[in-house]
Image (cartoon, rainbow, N blue to C red; front, side):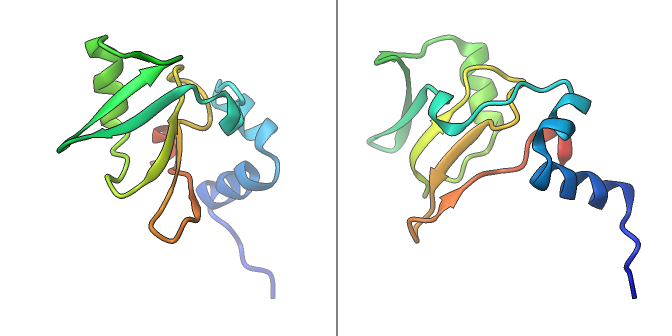
Length: 107
């Protein structure tokens, strides 16, 4: 028996198996994690964000990064400089498994 998927489930399946089509529908830019140039570094009780080795001071960009709600336990975090890439951030969880959050447009 074939299960009927909702439109949202169909889209998420398409995003997983045919990302180029889904990305085009959302007007997103395709980016792999090697293009995520912002790095998060632990600094005492807080985090520091850098781009090409320079500390990011732009308040709007920092607020966008914070709005991604990246878990503090993630390590080796890489973040997109652009707000319309299909990958906004990647990191490693406490099991050293790669973790990728859903884009905010899908939440």
